Amino acid sequence: MVMTAIIRPIFAVQILDKLNIRLMKNNFPRQGYSGFTLIELLVVIAIIGVLAGLGLSVTGGVKRQQYLKPARAELDQIATALDNFKAQYGVYPPSNPNLTPALNTLYYELSGVTHNLASQTYTTLDRSYTISDGSYAATFTAGGASIGGIINCTKGSAEDGTAAKDFLPSLRQNRIGTETNGTTLIGILVTSVGGPDQRYMAALAAAGFSGNPFRYVYPGTNNPSSYDLWIDLSISGKTNRISNWTRQPQILP
Image (cartoon, rainbow, N blue to C red; front, side, top):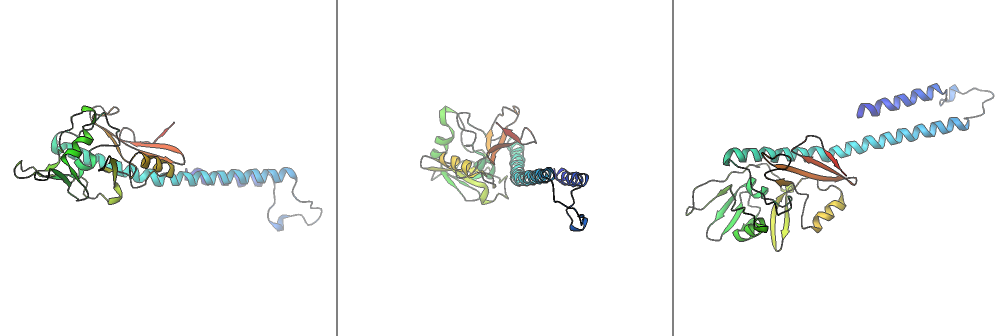
């Protein structure tokens, strides 16, 4: 894209030369010069317009990549964590087909939790969120789906000695968002780049999300033997989907 943007302005300059449009003062005839013709002026204006359009196109493409690249890197990080989770436990984290894919258990399962038997609560290993057993079950078993408890969990001595593992040890706070389910705040994984369009972020906020969440379905539709993982970015009014079933961003209609 950058090479195209460089070649086209050079080509435009060659056109100007062929039209013999003299822009330097010392190239103008000293006698009998009557200025540019109307056709010459129109040609110059048209070429300037083309060059301006090319500049805007290149700038827009660079800006789009500023959002797509970090979102892709974050998705790949989650995908690696999911594969490590599978290697540890033999399964991927469960999902509920009755829930929106944006509301999933990824944050709790990949960050790991401890379970307090006395208070009947889960607390993430990073200490960011605590949720009661009842609230977790009520959130993730909607529609009669059986999610069960959190797999990646360090349990009390009265239960067993399984030690949870943090599969996302470098996760920053701007990658943790929430979804409001009644009076309960559910921790979710979000992208650091936001919507990024503000209108899209407003729509997510209206649905109860404090960030732009990664979507997750297991087993997947596009990856039936594993899982589907994706993030939707609204850039200049267009939805760009980054997923684990294709390396190229998809522009949705």
